[in-house]
Image (cartoon, rainbow, N blue to C red; front, side, top):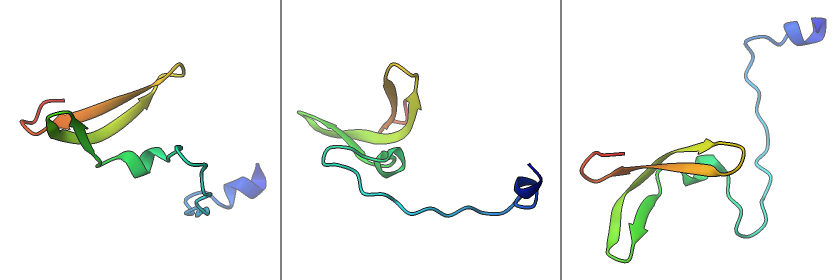
Length: 65
């Protein structure tokens, strides 16, 4: 604990570990276009992890979430 206290307020940098194909970091998904058969209709703005699954928040082009 004493050693950790000395690091309080410091910035920690880590390497981004490559993920297997089909796996993504959440921060890489934020800002992606949301599309369906009709085309783009918004952007992914947040991801909530509920434990059982993830919930994607999308802001539509007309400003709704």
